[in-house]
Amino acid sequence: MGMGMPLTKTLKQQTMVEPFGRMAIAHEWVSARAGSEKVFEELARVFTEADLYALTMTPGVELDTDARDIRTTILDRLGTLRDRRDLLLPVMPLAWRVMATNERYDTVITSSHACAKGFRPARAARHLCYVHAPMRYVWNPEIDNRGARKVAAPIRVALRRWDRNSVRWVDSFAANSSAVADRIQRFYGRQARIIHPPVDTSFFAAAPVESRDGLVTLGRLIPYKGHDIAIKIAARLNLRIKVVGRGPDEMRLRRLASDVGAKADFIVDANDEEVRAAVASSVALIFAAVEDFGIVPVEAQAAGTPVVGPGLGGLRDTVLEGQTGVFADDSSVDAVERALLRLLDSEFSDVRCREHAARFGIERFRSEVLEWVAATAGGA
Image (cartoon, rainbow, N blue to C red; front, side):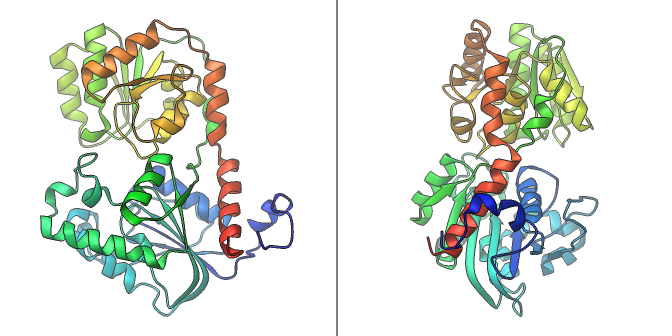
């Protein structure tokens, strides 16, 4: 690794003293404390002296960054327009390009699912890019077309060209899943090591379990998360379902539950303990979305709850087919229902679920990130 000492003996030390020179960590917009933001937060905990950057920060959203300020781009000055990312997408590369033009760093880590890898300070000896996903809006609108619907075709073409060209500024890529690593190879022609995001598995593993009943679907209440699929399946099978989360799709989902006669309990504004209890008291998690990684299925398994969902995207990495969950052929209601029926007809061990989930813990993430940065610093 070119560091002159065993990495295992210096992990704790490296979170306190930066052996990689002056560092910066840049993330996309911070609009919630969701999966990618938790990666950013954990990177900041590992590299305690790094300067922190983000495209924009939504007021009221707070990350644990050890009281360090997060510097934002000029787009953060646009008031409520800062959250209109469909409008801002064409100018995001420029916003990142003019950020920190007077700063000089030895190591830069970008946490990217859009344009953050375009962050180019005056000097950066090493640029490592952690990819949550290549821009879905321009590469995979069939997976998530929230932004693609509003991005004109010529702009998508221009963004694809920029996205492909910008890889020349990156020395090393890491992907959050094997599915994303495959896309990095396909779209950018580059290899990526796989570093799964950090999941607080110990918190969910500590869930008290008295009994299990019904289904659970968990996540932000937006269309592509597939909560409607879970509700329809629960109605078909006459099973109670907990819908845990909040978001703009809540009223539509409530109307759907009423229309199809689902016995649905909506749990909004739940704290961490309430989320954990909802998951741990359910027979299965229905996860119908196709995610690049997907933290929720790992949290469910950590609580001993098996997962049912399409065998696509991150689920291929996080769920053991037939041991900690069952894969559906696709994300349709019929396919996911068939997979759930197979699960209900089988025996699943909550101990096996917890053992598998433990592989995705926080300390593992910290260790793998340090190994990645050290390898790049050593020229590997």
